[in-house]
Image (tube, rainbow, N blue to C red):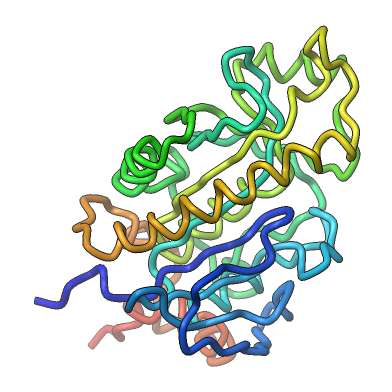
Length: 294
């Protein structure tokens, strides 16, 4: 039986994380997808024998704000390169006292309140409804937490990530509202990637590093870009250490999840009725479900 681990491990670098160290045999791949161009060239190669594909979410130099990112192109390009496990790194604000700046959160739920993003592949001739009840990979999220503790990070397993549109930070009223929903952290990117990962049957592994207390905290009641960048720099080195160790650990672990069957029963169309252009566009996503009826 084929080892399901031996695909490619994808890494999406968030704010400040524009490359990874120690990539051997690296290549920069310029790619175009049916959904447009990704944020940046994808760097492929190996880290201690493990095949990886790295993509800067905002582009090198942070050219794209959260609403401008082509999430569909990013995720489709990674899938096309063989990625079946994806580490998504992001910077977030904390909505709980016990989750302090520079802590790591591995969320297990999302509230998506964005309204300017394209966030499904299933349109224009094909329809599917995937379950988002459990949006992250339970096996690899627990593994990420274990590795983070071993790395010496102050970490929190689980929690609700509130995905706002941005790019402005919250008002105080908004921040208190999100806290009233019992959310743990607030960010501007990761929920969309989690949704698309489900449609792509990719194991989604979120790591969210806290930069600030949003603006609800009485001792830090005004979030500024300067404050965020200061803590961001502290988080980047921790993020790289965690990702490098996690990549090696993932490659030797056997998953116990249903991520790679998340489209099963979700596609409403009969494969015999799909237009050729739909099949061409969607084959990297639905190829294994395209067996024609006799």
